[in-house]
Image 1 (cartoon, rainbow, N blue to C red):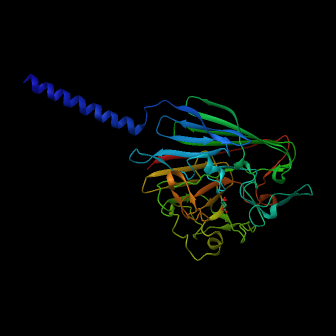
Image 2 (tube, protein in one colour):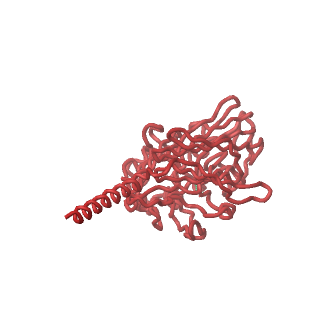
Image 3 (cartoon, rainbow, N blue to C red):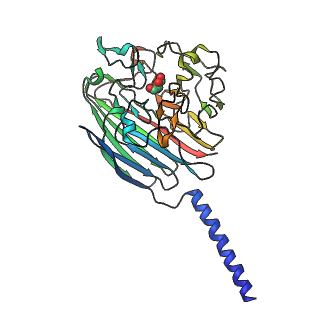
Length: 382
Ligand code: BGC
């Protein structure tokens, strides 16, 4: 009898401990938040590249390198509690030093295109590097994505881990006027959010439009066409055939550009629509109805992994790009081949070519002013 009672007691204890370990691994409460710094290699003549691993102790990890201020990975739990890296990129520094389409990089001084690489400020003409047909794209030949950023500081507070990086862009770099001091802060919160805050100051009038160019794929499918997307934008800015806004602001009104309620990305991507044809898919700026850090302007989710991402931003627009120019020629993380549309970008920013469109929200930064903007990416299971 005693023996039987003993067996029952042991079985009971085993059941309890098994159940609680399952709970722990799902809630991911096991570790305390940490920032780990390691070497990610060296760039001849520039120096050591550091990697910062931010781990919020709740199952979410973000790796950032100070070359290009690149987000190398975003690791989040799926609905089964398995951790998935949901961004495109490379395992090693060598990959990031090759010609690649801005995987995870910061973009500056100007996100997206400036027509013919030129603008005027107070009647003076400035000529920028042209690196995309006739146009200037993503800051030029050697934009902020290809420079080594300095570490300012890294710290933890009650809810978050923070990393601050800085870069001084000298007067005349890529053709832009003014010395521009930029400070970028990445935070990872205990609520599975990445917060990016951008700040900049100049000593001469210049144009600034900073963003992050992460490519997401929430379930590792060969294309992202089955992801569902919502962008609270009633309007978008159509482009000419060099992807420069025509200046018209069009209503999305039920057409392929209408993502005002959740819709499969692929739903209309093959449609017979002139704008879709020009972009080879989506490669357009959406005019956000109500940019805010209180409620998300964008939601995207995968029914396979049941991972969802909400994007909150103070920026007036978002460039939604469906990786149309990926063509299988890049071998990325773990030997994965990046085929057309294997990732999408949501680049929160001012509109492309704003310096040449007076009626677009201005990107001009004056000496004495501070450029500051914030975007939040929140991850969860649904
Ligand atoms: C642009 C695309 C470009 C891609 C990679 C996106 O922001 O809108 O046209 O191909 O970046 O450079």
